[in-house]
Length: 109
Image (cartoon, rainbow, N blue to C red; front, side, top):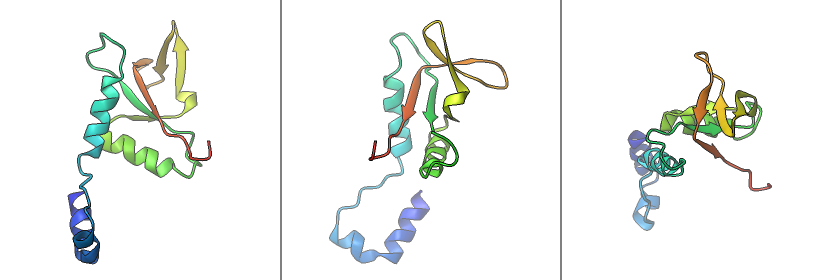
């Protein structure tokens, strides 16, 4: 991301000189830290996922990018199920409990 900022500064120097532009390199880390704080009490190492409506959604690339940048799984609704009042995701190693689900909504919704 740092390379992107440097490129933008070279391409649009007037933008950076006229406006206060805050760096966003740490956004994924900050988001993940805040999502982990939303985990149920007593969960020390929460499993966080990004829930996407599917690959045909206009924001799918953003969902995939966000999951990749934060290091969490990208899931769709069909990947999740509820058992004993807990949410689990299907994995190749078997069910894994999910503690926090990040779901982005379209403005129209």
